[in-house]
Length: 551
Image (cartoon, rainbow, N blue to C red; front, side):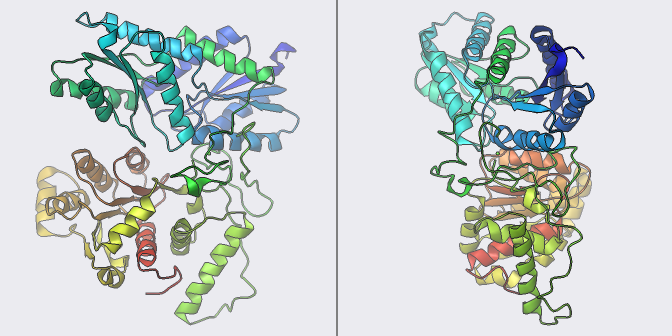
């Protein structure tokens, strides 16, 4: 290999199940390679192949001495701060002879702002009417994140796009995970007097989110027939985007790449994100560590670091550390203990000890949930896989204390939930899966009984303000999501189906909701024991009962 080619660029895309989106990414990577004059190894965080680790291995196999890992992400959120640094740190330990450098997200660069301005101008030029810029509102629509630092970048971009261009308004909106949503911002622009509204998707490539975003925007045309509503193109494989990526690469090679910690929720305590202050830098085997063998025991790699933005997570997944699967019996615990309360207490003692030995700690109420799941499954990987929206635990506890209904998808989940504790709080427990009407309607509608049972529960008024618990059927979770999109508002959705068909996809759809609190687990794992564990932990928290209390 020549001296020039001892360097390589590892271009890390997010990934998509949409073939057109992956094709656009590949096209962009090819164009970038033609400009940079170096080998470019494209790879993906999730949903598409190759995973990041295979891109790294390709660099190593080619004899690369210096690898620049450049995340093709628009903002500094969890993937940028957690998942990618975790795999880069892992690679540094695997191949210490190779120098690994890490770049920063694209962010509000001048090239990106100019490209958005061009996309707006293109949409306006193709529009049917001549309306003044002063009467035009642009809406920059981002994916949305649980990271306030990343969300704030969209507002900076919107402001810089407004400066000097004569538009009446440039607003920011989010597709999911945070507010304000698209519909709210369109209504705001109409109320402010905009005669034309142009949506600007702040997305690199096409895909499901792009199509759903456009659908939401275009649906507003019927509500506001007197306002011209247009949709612009996403960023795509434009020369200005290539220039923005080249600029970030040059910053790395010149030693100037650095992420500021000024607004990092892991470094500083912000209102609404206090529980995430100080969390360690982690990833899991569905994201940054996809394709990396799972670590076992004290000699395995733990993928668990403090936050440093020269190599820099969303707070959940909580950790990739897993205690030794061949753990030895605890010498201080009687192996033939017969008392149920003592067995339960000893089990939780083992769980907490092994988590602590692995360097994993978290506060209540989250600790009670994770410990209860592990207690029910003997699977420490759920410390990685558990996901929840902000305020989800508090919403569940409040709903239980108010005596809400709890509705499950299958009887196996219903049977495991403590009916006594729920009744003491004034609540009620329901599962309609086996009812005669459920069977009849499911057969007529060619759907599953678990999905139909939840539909009928919604018609009976059980779901609004209640807690929906799905531990078995992805079809049931999809039905609940559909009902929510039509206006249903449960207090909490616990969606942890298990299996191989539509399981991952249904959970991903749940995690896109920003109107209803939710708890889920990433990947294929989940099931009735997990669903039951979450509800019973919440019941104990609502009743101020210790997590180790037996029923």
